[in-house]
Image (cartoon, rainbow, N blue to C red; front, side, top):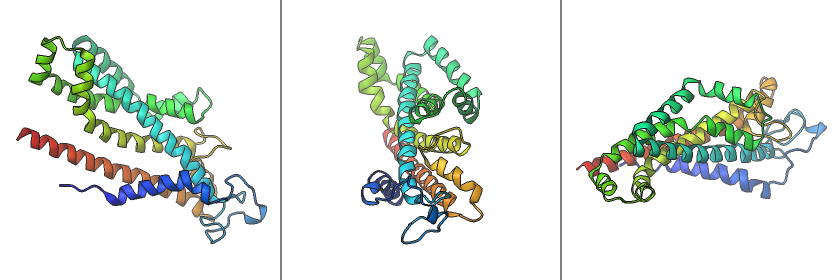
Length: 270
């Protein structure tokens, strides 16, 4: 039996606590300029160093982490629930409903996701909520396809056919029987969705078309450090390392959930 990845879970919890509770204890301003502290390396005074304007990097990473993590979670929640609804609808109703949904999914998947993000973001001013909506629009298809496939299998189960023949409410069948069976798959896709959304936001911000100053995210901080990376490695290293840690930890947790789900399926078959 695969064990819960305690290190990955601990890392995620610590990063969340540092970003959302850290500013309560670490009083340095993320916006205060200090001409006498420009590009200082990590030290006891500035734990992660300072940037080109003398701003404390740790304070900025905590502030930026709040936005990056919020965008990642909200985007994944919206995309996952929308994908769940679309996938269940295709698998449960089938026939014409399924044909319309699969054409819609294939239409979205025709465009490379990141280029679709670039196309959508170019028509509006980026902000936290705009990015959440746009990343959600481009992130629901994989969830919908997975749920659709599993919903088809569930629809063929004898007890579901009996419930349909017995004239049980469709909403009741979906909520009481489909949703619990699809929960493991939902959470697996959700963890991937969070990491994908964080990477998408970071990529857009790194290119200068995501979160715009004075707001900040890990992608913005990473972008600001690229021009001085040869003399101030810490500006790019720390936000990049946090993005890596969050993504890697979520993938580990997703692998654990997938292993548990497969293990449960094997036991049910026996």
